[in-house]
Image 1 (cartoon, rainbow, N blue to C red):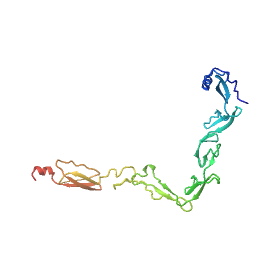
Image 2 (cartoon, rainbow, N blue to C red):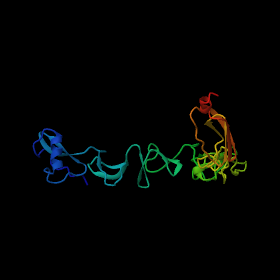
Image 3 (cartoon, helix red, strand yellow):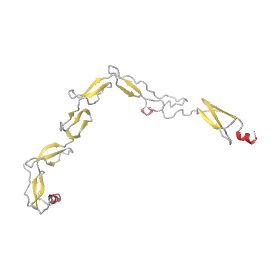
Image 4 (tube, rainbow, N blue to C red):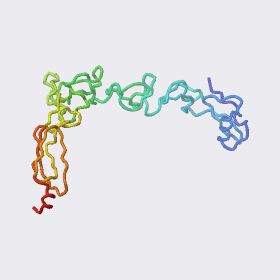
Length: 270
């Protein structure tokens, strides 16, 4: 049926259309609510009701952000959903322009199709469940995603605890494909060792090299005497007037050679 546009130009006094729209919004005029395809206008300084132009939005009661209903030439709010520019209506959901997150071989392309997915361009990258293939979209094939075996395909691999990768001596390896499309073993990876010997490396990849081991080289400020001992660590107390003496350790034993403290030699005039 046609919209109830009511009498025109016989309402309250007005200067502009906005005056009449304000009365509508306040609910003080007209006595009956405006139909979906009717609008308040100021005619001859009196508020009246006129039909919206054909194609004007008239409702959005489908709950979808991307769609609206439009007025017909006879002022009827047509219940045919019109999808807004930049959107596709797929399975009752509004989708923005771009690829289908679940299938890269499908895209929202409103210029081609507004009420469903359009096929992606041939050659668009996709991914199947096979490791050793190059995958591309082909609109002429079922499912869209096609594959071709490629023996040059490689994958980075690491079978240890991910937290240890690239820590200490640990590093990832590479799996390579053969001509039959079979992915090989992980080659070149270095996994954590059970122990961490005193070799200056973080062998168990825990972020610490040689825990509890004696230092390889250390310097003490003495001159001319002998200090020796064993164990992973030791301490020597220095005296005034010392000179630098370097000392090396072997395994867990250590030794420093130095003579009479230089300050005592100076005091004796030696």
